Image: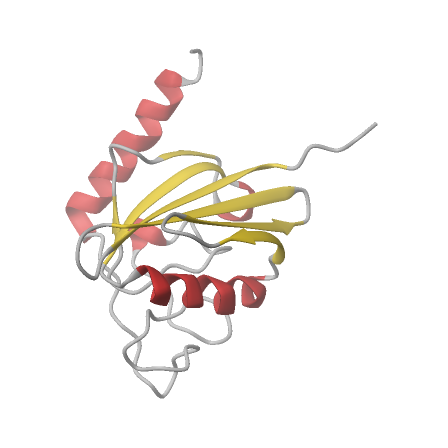
Length: 159
């Protein structure tokens, strides 16, 4: 595929950033958290929340749970800021039910509109924002952890 060298470059750059800065976010305190529970995943970067560390700073348009770790083997990102597309793979140390509640609550705060949700042992949530579609797949990852696959793509426009 012709995009492979660009993807490798993007992943290599992300790897360097992760090695230098680490990839964990600090949990937010209850005084500035946009979540409703101190034990729930913390919110993203909107509504006065602190900015994430540099490893996650290019994802300012989507909520990311506190202490999430990026899986570089499964992540491929093209573009930056509010125009990126690709797959962001995360390992989150929260149960699937908490991650579902987190995205259900936080996505609208980032101006994403829910299109559809399918809840089961593997939950799929689809949101739209402008000319982009976000699909979030949540899978249990042993015990109280969840694997999050966050895929953003351009919305197809009918002609």
